[in-house]
Each structure stands twice: as C-alpha cells, then as structure tokens.
Image 1 (tube, rainbow, N blue to C red):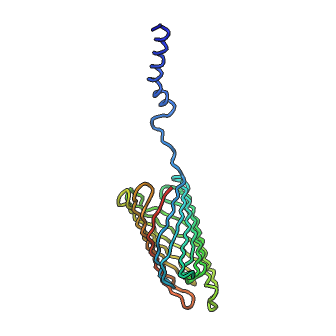
Image 2: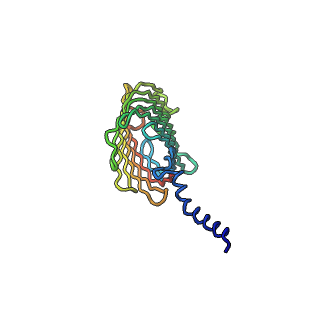
Image 3: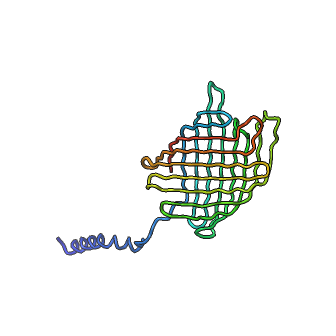
Amino acid sequence: MKLTDSRRLLSCFLGLLLWPSATLAIVPPEYEDPEEPWTAGIEFGWMYDKGNKTSRSLNTTLEIEYEIKDKYKGYFEYNFDFASDDDVETTKKDRLQLQGDYNFNDDNYVFARADIKSDEFGSFAEENTYSTGYGHIFLDKKKHKLNVEVGPGFRHSKPQDDNFDDQAEDEVIIRSVLKYQRFFTEHLKFYADSSLEVGEKNSISVTNLKLEQKLFGDLFLVFDLQYTYRDKVPTDTVRNEFVNKFNLKYVF
C-alpha cells in the first residue's frame, strides 16, 4: 500500500471518529424538540338520551386544543348526535364549544367562552351562552388537577317553533364551573365537571363524568355520563335530561 493511500485511509477513519462530536457541538445534549402546541381527537359511538324523548343514537365529537404552556390555551369541541326510525328523525342535535384562556401565572387566568346548542327534540330549540371571567387552579399535581372558573355571561334560549305558549328569552347570567381530573394510571383517566348558570329567568346545572381508558397507540375507550337540570322549561317539556355515551376516541 502506498503512503498516500494510507494517509487517505487514516483521514477517513479519524473523520468517522470525530463525526459524533461534531454533531453534539451543533445540537447540545440538553436540547429537546419543542412541544407541539396542537392536539386533536375524534370520538364516535353509541349514545342513550333520556329527556323529552328517549332515544338511542349515534354521536360524533371533534376536539381541537392549542396550548402554549404558561401563556395561552384554546379549546374547540363540536358534537353531533343523530338517529332515525323508519326514516323519521328521533334525535338531531349539535353543540359547539369554544374557550380561550390567558394565564397570568401558574395559578390564575382569565377566559372567554361560547357554548352554542341546537336540539330539534329538546326543551329548547336553541340555547346559546357566552361568558367570560376568572379561573383559579387549586391543584396541579401528577395525579390530581382541580380548577374553578366564575364570571358573568349572557344566555339566549328559544323554544321549539311549534311551542306557541312560550317566547324566546335573553338574560344576563353568572356562570361557575368546577373541573377535576384524576389520573389513576398512565392509561386510565377520570374527569368530572360541574357547572351552574344562574339567571333571573332560569338556572341550569350540568354534571359531567367521564372515564377514559387507553387501548393501544392513539386509540381510547370513553365512557361519558351527563346530567342536566333546568329550573324552568317550556310548556309540556321536562326539566331533567340524562345522556350516556360509549365511544371510541382517536387522538392525532
């Protein structure tokens, strides 16, 4: 072997040895990829609804969340429920929820929220609530999270078109909500929300319980219970509504 060939071989060998060091010089050991601010998920499955009518129907939920830790948080959720019997609709309702949070510090934030509902067979054909206010995080641990929100808002309620005894109502409200999360394991989570909207003409309370079990990968099994009570409702409609959902959820 010639001397020049030996030098070339030695240069290549040294280059291979020094390559990892050069890479570490460009990317320091403490470097971490930035967290992706967007998360989204879609649910679909079976629902049991007992209110003015009792029905078993299909439901779909789309969730999108945007979060920059310690600064902003945005949340979007859209639900659509539908069922028919012999080509006659028995359930048709949808709900759009939007909320944006701005954090002052680790424990305090302000929010603005919109909750827009329509239900072809419910006590109200439309029920739209807009609110803003203050939120406080009481607990933010590895296995437990608890926060409370309270603030003023505005609610528009419209009875069904065939109800001639009652009129649409607009009123100022005070809305408060308690949110609790419990992480039993990495794959099993429990959520509990309880809200109360108090107005001069009507008050509405909602309790929602959800259990979420990870099956594999990005697929989850979700069991959801929701109970709604309205202090005043249109003529010949009920105050209580119970909804039970059994869904599959895919996160992407």
